[in-house]
Length: 109
Ligand SMILES: CC(C)(COP(=O)(O)OP(=O)(O)OC[C@H]1O[C@@H](n2cnc3c(N)ncnc32)[C@H](O)[C@@H]1OP(=O)(O)O)[C@@H](O)C(=O)NCCC(=O)NCCS
Figure 1: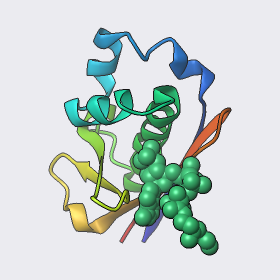
Figure 2 (figure 1 turned 90 degrees about the horizontal axis):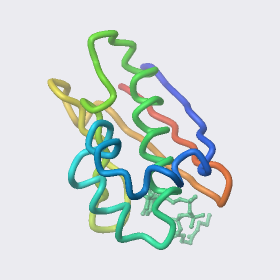
Figure 3 (figure 1 turned 120 degrees about the horizontal axis):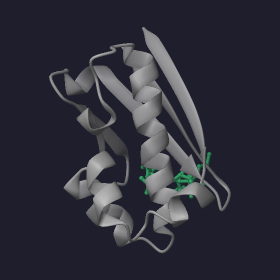
């Protein structure tokens, strides 16, 4: 089993909320759509960025790039992570965000 953690400052993502070119480089279409519907998209984007970093740490695979990792929310709101060429049921994430910070923890079993 491996774990990974990351924390991000939400403020850093304020300037990216309307920057489509940046968003498309880092986030999936579904992630962008989900975050842009939220009241404070920078918080949700920062949490997803933290999730990508946390998953990357947990997987410890240098070939992975940030856009290979994405988060999709289940109907009940639970975040589920998808990683290119990896088994989805082996990787779990949990996200949290406040006005200032967003954090994520990832576990790979
Ligand atoms: C789900 C819940 C715990 C989120 O907590 P919060 O303090 O409001 O918000 P946080 O910033 O910590 O977490 C938000 C993230 O939780 C995740 N989340 C939402 N629903 C979830 C669920 N059912 N299970 C796990 N994670 C969930 C999402 O990833 C969300 O971020 P996102 O929308 O950007 O994806 C809360 O909204 C809730 O429903 N609480 C119910 C009351 C309760 O029983 N609390 C626990 C008492 S011990």
